[in-house]
Image 1 (tube, one colour):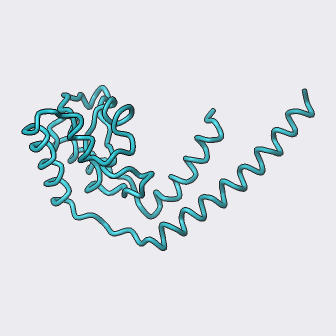
Image 2 (tube, rainbow, N blue to C red; image 1 turned 60 degrees about the vertical axis):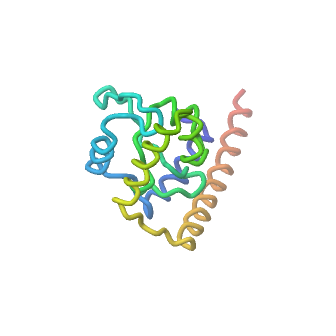
Image 3 (cartoon, one colour; image 1 turned 45 degrees about the vertical axis):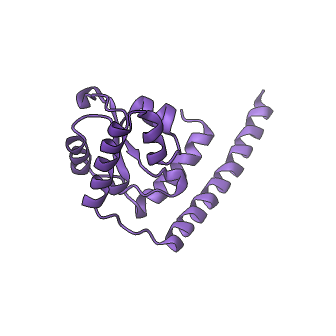
Length: 156
């Protein structure tokens, strides 16, 4: 059972998904092929059948980065979940690769990927409206959680 905080995040993400869908299965395959089954940041070889790769946001969704494939790169779990987080991808890439030649090569590959996949422009008004709707649903959910907690204390 997901915790209330996770449910709130899922509510917000599911509403955003309507206007800014995640990459399709075909797009995910293109990402894997383009990056040669290697982490775009550290170069670690990844096995797709073992679900080792992550389709990372170059610009974090928390910072309004789009779900479009032009804003996605193949990443290992360590880079995506533990190290990069909301850091700008270029800054992270430089910190991850002290060898400037390797960092430059990987950075050029990411830039080329972005250029090959023209991003969609998300309307700021629509994004704000979706965020507002998500907050409304979360506020409603919070009120119902409080009712449920009161019921629980009555039964103890």
